[in-house]
Image 1: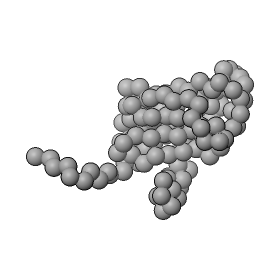
Image 2: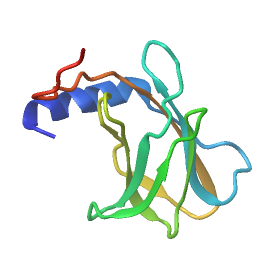
Image 3: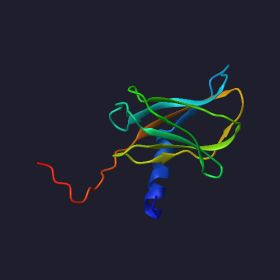
Length: 123
């Protein structure tokens, strides 16, 4: 993202990301729900990527019809989670410490973001 927009996305993320570790959780996964900010409608087909510390994508999934997603984490370590969908602001978590036998719940409310399409004419 460009300099100015990056700050906006990070500020927005602070208020819309909910992280929790349920008692007795097992497995090494990140799961949650992606909804539209303000309406609560599920965001279907959002691109959810897990990136390692070097910012290389390790896992990529799409949210389902209810906005839910599950990312299986192959190895314990430090990761970023990025949620992206056309027409919405891209959100990214801070660096997460994902260890064995944990399930991290991360739900997002995506703010809408108008896109400009040059040369597109709707009749």
